[in-house]
Length: 147
Image (cartoon, rainbow, N blue to C red; front, top):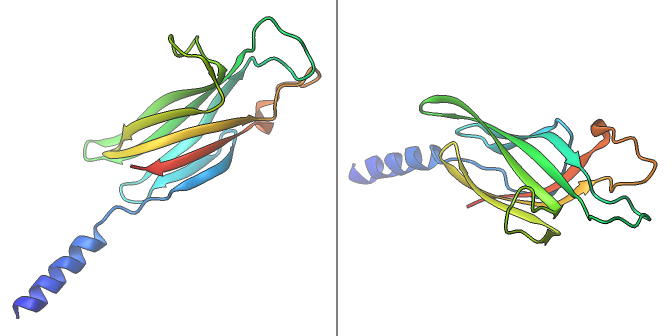
C-alpha cells in the first residue's frame, strides 16, 4: 500500500514540473512572440529595434549599434507581469557604459519565477545604404536557455 501511495505522489510531483522550450539560434521576426515556458506561461516578443550600424560599403566615424527591445510576458502567483529588456550588438557603450564592440550579447534574467539566458547573435538584415529601415522585415537570431 505504501508503494502505491509513494508512486502516486511521485507521479503527481513530476506532472506538476515546469515544461520549458529551449530555442537554439532561432530566427524571430519583428513583433513575433515565442514561448519561453508552458507552466507557468511565459513568452518573449521581439518588440522593437533601433539600428544605427554603419551600412555595408560605407566608411563611418562610428560603428553604430543595433539595440533590440524584448518584451517578456508571463504569469506569476501575483498575476500577469510584463517586462522590457534591451540587448545590443555593435558599439554598445550607449547601453552598457563599460562595453566594447559586441558581436553577441548575453543576458541572464530571472522572470516569472524562472531563470533564462538569452544570447542575441544577429539583427537582420544588415544595414545597407539604400535600405528603407522597414522594421516589419527585421528579424533577430536569439538563443534561449532555461538555467
